[in-house]
Image (cartoon, rainbow, N blue to C red; front, side, top):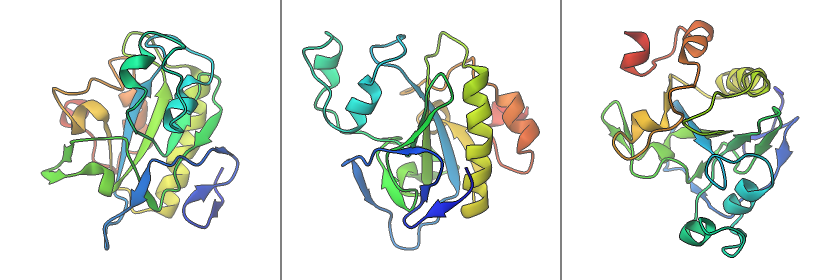
Length: 189
């Protein structure tokens, strides 16, 4: 998982191109990785609902919650399943729609300069060893291609609006592996 194709598509992962994508602003370099969690329906794992959501084909009749989000258009660059499988939805040279209204270190619009990594999970359950085993080489590959200077959670770039990746995410392991990167203040305190 370290060879890249044109447009920032990573070899060794499954590609499912999302229509929810845009160009990054001219001169904008990827400098931030934003970690998220997602499960559909909430707190349930398995199935292809997240993939369907990022591809704009979520069936609003399949679950009551889906009717509330079926017309929302979002994407992430990567999605790490509970079993460690990685799916890429957006080439990393492009802008995925994952952070929404956001700010990191007084710089707005994190989607313009970040990579979004969704972990299949929720705020109430730990992530799996298989997910971390996939996340570490993914972060290494991103750092090898882009000038990543920081890693933050969605909760850090959209405080008060978002809570993910949640209290079970292993920030200590991130800090140990990437001590040279800027991390959220409460992680390094």
